Image (cartoon, rainbow, N blue to C red):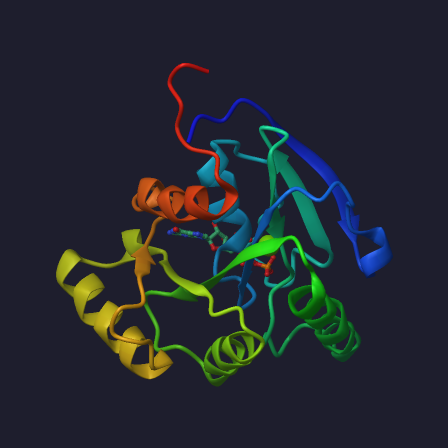
Length: 201
Ligand SMILES: Nc1nc2c(ncn2[C@@H]2O[C@H](COP(=O)(O)OP(=O)(O)OP(=O)(O)O)[C@@H](O)[C@H]2O)c(=O)[nH]1
Ligand SMILES: [Mg+2]
């Protein structure tokens, strides 16, 4: 993908606050600290587009970023981190659920899981829930740089099994440290936003 422009558009809680330009969008969901914001930054080659942190719960609103003024990438707050306050957990569900269920311009949900660990109950519930609402997510396993090649393949198999992915469902292994998997992931995004790599631009 040729990135010509990256622009932070807005942070939203309620549907009335979402951008209403009608351009397609791709959203990133996953457990708190799994690496959603880091992956977004690596995808667009900007170190600080989305805020990241070693402390779970960094992203607390729905953040919209416009790419090439053609589509949005959407950073959602993470779910399922016990230490995030009860108040925050209580606001996450309605905020993210409303978005994921009703956003008409949402073309693809990308669900991140940590390649180092077995998916959690929350991960499985999120996958099932999204599939139930007709948005089966693309699974992306993050933090591959922390594992050997052999461990990557082994853990990828475990994730497929535990998440109960259909045999033909793609799964992308990535590292926001090295950039591994970014081209493959862009391939999936390009398919739904209809913006390809056009060298004549
Ligand atoms: N080694 C390594 N560390 C990563 C990778 N991706 C993210 N991290 C680290 O994991 C931590 C969490 O990353 P974030 O991108 O903030 O995670 P998040 O999913 O956006 O978290 P919330 O906003 O809390 O939901 C940070 O310390 C990152 O540096 C990766 O691919 N490799
Ligand atoms: Mg984040």
